[in-house]
Length: 133
Image 1 (cartoon, rainbow, N blue to C red):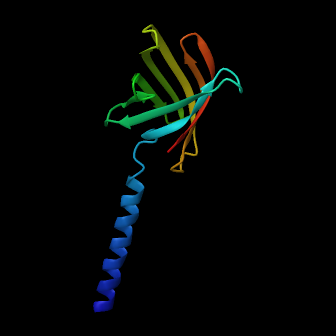
Image 2 (image 1 turned 120 degrees about the vertical axis):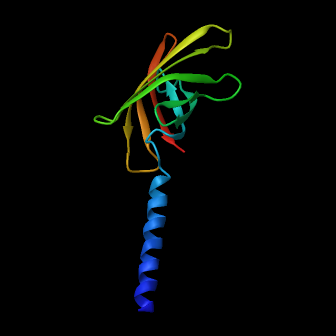
Image 3 (image 1 turned 90 degrees about the vertical axis):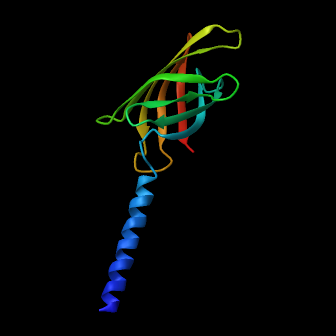
């Protein structure tokens, strides 16, 4: 009888740990994402996205630091795993700059998910790729 109880307790403990580990992933976009974007292969700019899920919406910041750009809207279509992010920021001269990001979420089952797609910043468009850190 004692052996059966010990096995039951051990089994429950293993299942609890597995559930807790799976819960760590949370929302598919939540986390820190790093990579680059640019209009050409030779003209690239480093990029950091901090994305969070507040229970009803994706929130976050583009390039946090001295000139962060708060995300205004972010949508995820789970049917196609497509993502759209829009933001308004300021350039080094204080001029308003619009950001529009259209992406596809890849490697959904992996912790190191990937976002790739098109990036428009002001009047400059290009492609981008970021990996969740």
